[in-house]
Length: 224
Image 1 (tube, helix red, strand yellow):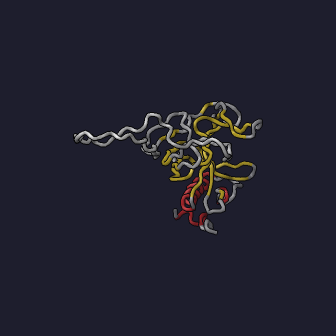
Image 2: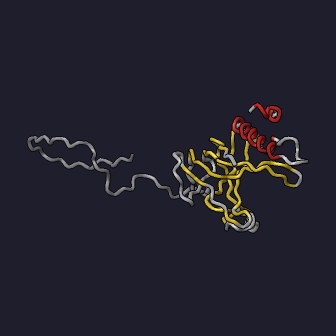
Image 3: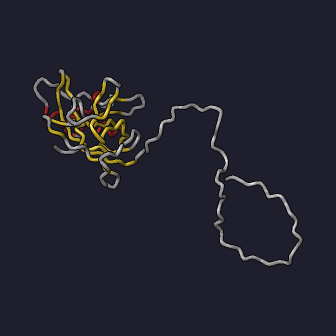
């Protein structure tokens, strides 16, 4: 299958470092073994109108090439979810195993194409390129095109931040200069000028300071 690359999209809830499945006990996705029920690698992504239209066009090509009898005449564009602000979201995934044979973890690389560690934890908000292949399918009488995740290139990484559960309250704060050693002088030494001895007057130290045409009929309704 030919690989298609979706460029410069926003990563949403990426789960690529290992397989995950939904755990009803804790009501959220949790890491799991590749052979566990529902195990998959996945990434949702957010894209602008132009990127979404290009993706829909390629998905439609694959849909038409693989359409079965009784399938809808064309792929419904609503499979791409549109936000109130005009952006679109979709998801790419890869099952942990097919026919009980484990799949290979999707490749993660940096902007220069260097492979990232297997345990690299991609974050929501990061800008990525997503490599996928198309897999048209029918489920319950509804057709769609699955994006099978192949690889992710991290274009801009948003560091994972520690979540502070507390509100601001009155009390202890870290303020002032707590360095007991002071600051070293970094300027060039000045030649000392020897003067006549003067009477020494003791003074208190000063305070310290702090510092495609063939599918035109399919996509004509994109803007409707």
